[in-house]
Image (cartoon, rainbow, N blue to C red; front, side, top):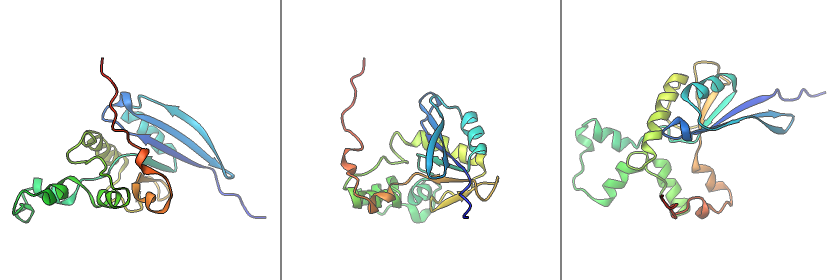
Length: 180
């Protein structure tokens, strides 16, 4: 008789800049079935951290870092100074390697973590990752935390679109809701 895989718990975090717009979900995986065990909005950092410590895997829908040329530029690295202020140079400051891959696959640019509205939630994410003990922000594979080697934080990535047939062109609408 083959032993069944032990039950795994996954925390998914749809992170926003403020707790009021942050959603969380805990899914329990057992014997090939997924069961939602917890679903909430308005999730505080404390709620996210508490659930993270009770789950095997935490997935956060947020970039874990900034483009290397952008960081070098801000730190005043002389080699990061542009020879000319060109569109190519601006794209290097705005987009990560993953973003260039997304553009190549979809023909669309994702939000820039250095210059779009996603920058503030990414800063919040960095604070959470620090509290989780995550030091590897590469986004490559799993990022082990200090708790156990099995508990890890994984970056939600668009890279999977390269191997699936999902129509990504409908994922983000350019329409804006009317403001009152």
